[in-house]
Image 1: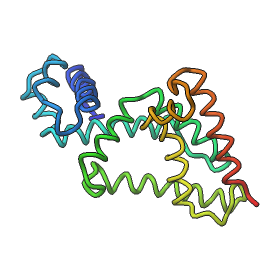
Image 2: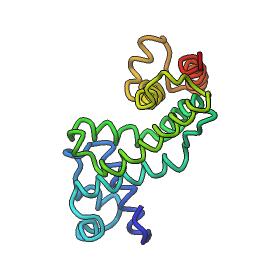
Image 3: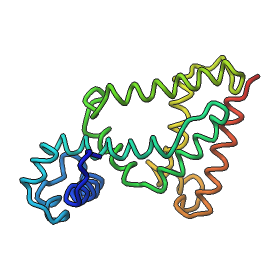
Length: 195
């Protein structure tokens, strides 16, 4: 979030989150964001730039919150999948923002591409260190381990219809989420175990 988090800026960011999550980058409208935030359009442009810049700021804010809430720890890497699942299930707006980013932009056009790549490299390095310490199988490519964990954690949140079709139950209930989280951590432990 921008350093000067005035009430108006907070309202604009909240309104922009809702607008982008619902309509995506192309479908979002600054006038609707302004109305929802009880702010004028000029304030949005002055504080955040154009619509693309605002989307980048909104997404970065949500990804920063995620990074602070979910940490990949070398001694408990399988638990990362469960914690990531919990966070994303509790923050469906983040899931939708990332979906819209993927639908609207090429990978290199993703907001903060370089910074986000560096943050992911930090997680890859943590996995490689966990491998050196014997916590997980050292034969696995740590980059692909990270991709696997993120994919496992988030997939049913991105495509809940598949969860319901395959499992035969609403994947959004508290019990279904608890069961899925337990499965994620258990399968990650088995897949990554040192042999």
